[in-house]
Image 1 (tube, one colour):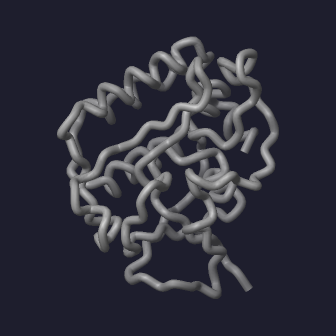
Image 2 (cartoon, helix red, strand yellow):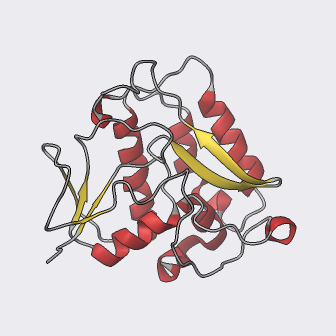
Image 3 (cartoon, rainbow, N blue to C red):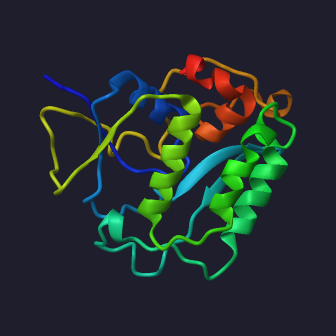
Length: 202
């Protein structure tokens, strides 16, 4: 019988990720020993821009894409992606009800320059869990296993390139009148639009 869930560490994870956390708390395991897979939410997030879906990508140091453990992947600062991400978040969510409420906490992540992607994502996740008031204690894998019998394995199930079968209730989105409701965006979309009510939504 499954007891808890195994999840990857994502950058500003999608809403589905947090519904899994909420449903399986407190037994959550985070995969730390897997090889870094390309083109996944581990280093990208989807937000709602005036033109529809916008993808934010955290660049990683060349060579990190081949047989490098996810915990050892380094962030690249060859171009100022932090400025780009922060300007995108501002332009997409400045009109939302709660952006200013969280702004000072988020902006720090676009000023500091941490070395490792896993650590960066972990710090963001810890902050977001605090905002959501989700009582989740994260445990980390110590070695890689292809399969787990005791855990629901979500490592390959939430993917930026695959349509999710996640059933999601609608909530107000800033640009909804232009492009309709976009589902399973980054948790920041829910947070900036719903604020403290986000946990009730989950």
